Image 1 (cartoon, rainbow, N blue to C red):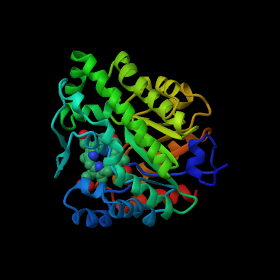
Image 2: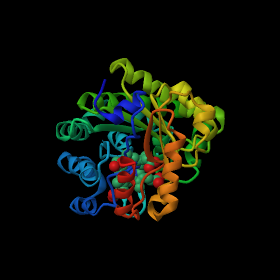
Image 3: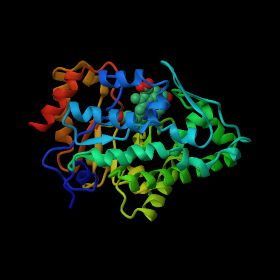
Image 4: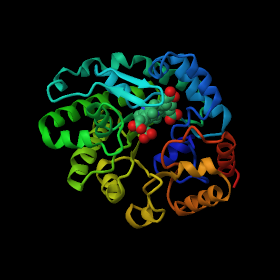
Length: 341
Ligand code: 1CP
């Protein structure tokens, strides 16, 4: 038995009230985050400076009574560690020099853990600093999602570059996925050994895929990671978040072996009841813009979400990341309502 309510929910134990964390809970909506960010040259420097990364990870816990902290880092530290440098341009998001079928062989999986040593040091510091009842969440991007940035060179709404690459160069694509699966296993095992209680797989671009592509690019690699991590850390608690998976969600849950399923906000509330095993823990799924707008449309939806998942272990969260415009009072009100119902 664990005394951490959020970890317990991931492990399938229903809690008296849903534990809560907020996707991207450290970030630009917090003035204390912006103050620290202003002291760093660029975003990756913040991720690679344990003292500052530890501080920004803990900031949301000081302000709100959340049940978990999520390691402050980014899914794109993995390509950076593989030797495909990532830059974060102001107001533009990540920029990378795209990989080609020829350059994939020159990625350097053997240097991943060495490059990410500062992030693992942050996990150790967090472990030491966190109150016993709070859950520490580690994470990485799932291979397909990370590959969309490595191939496209930046974020896009349709992932067309990566989708075409996977179809045109199946061997090179498979080699890239193999590298990302292996690197992700190493990285997640290292996070768990450094003190993470739970790890989350962010498959943020699980949309725009036909079911054959979903099987090959999402289900198979996520399953390999779950199995590879558990071969080294038996029973490792894992949350899968396949954003946009829609009609593929039940397959994802059944076949990857994740403990808990993150739901995006477009997933209908009765979906779990109709299509998921009765005891499968779910996480989610408030529209982040309801948290921006506040008022009755926020409060009423929160109640609907809690009621819909009341019969199973449920972790309350947004259905995608919090946005910079979110008023801090709305976050405080949400956490307070959840804790004092
Ligand atoms: O200067 C800044 O403050 C940059 C903004 C920012 C932040 C705060 C980025 C750039 N990344 C992060 C931190 C981050 N990213 C965290 C830890 C913080 C926390 O949750 O408290 C996590 C878990 C992520 C994960 C992440 N990065 C995802 C998966 C989740 C999701 O939102 O779907 C993705 C897709 C990224 C890539 C990324 N990093 C940053 C941006 C702007 C983006 C998205 C680019 C795009 O839209 O394609």
